[in-house]
Length: 111
Ligand SMILES: [Zn+2]
Image (cartoon, rainbow, N blue to C red; front, side, top):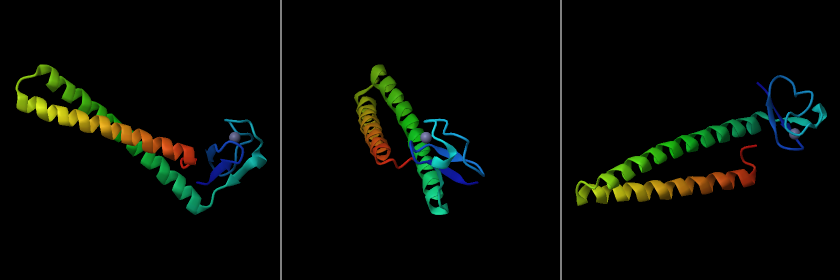
C-alpha cells in the first residue's frame, strides 16, 4: 500500500492513489507526493514507536496509582520506602517520555 503526503500540511494518506483533496487542509490531489519505500517505512516505524511510548505511559500511570495506594495504606516503613521509589521512577519516566514525544512532534518525525 502506497503512502501519500500532503505537501501543504503533512497529512498522510494510505491507498493506491492520493485523495481528491486533503481531509485536513483541503489542498487538491496535485499537492500529494508519493513517499518512497524508505520514507514510508520510516513513517510506519515512527508511528509504531509513538504507539509503544503511549503504551509505556499507561503502564507507568498504573504503577503510579499502585505506589500511591501503598503509601496511603502506610503498613510499614519498608513498604512505603519502596513505594516512594516506584512513585519517583514513574513520575520521572513519564516526564522523560512526554519530553521525547514533544521533540519528535517538533521535528515532524511522525509526519
Ligand atoms: Zn493537507
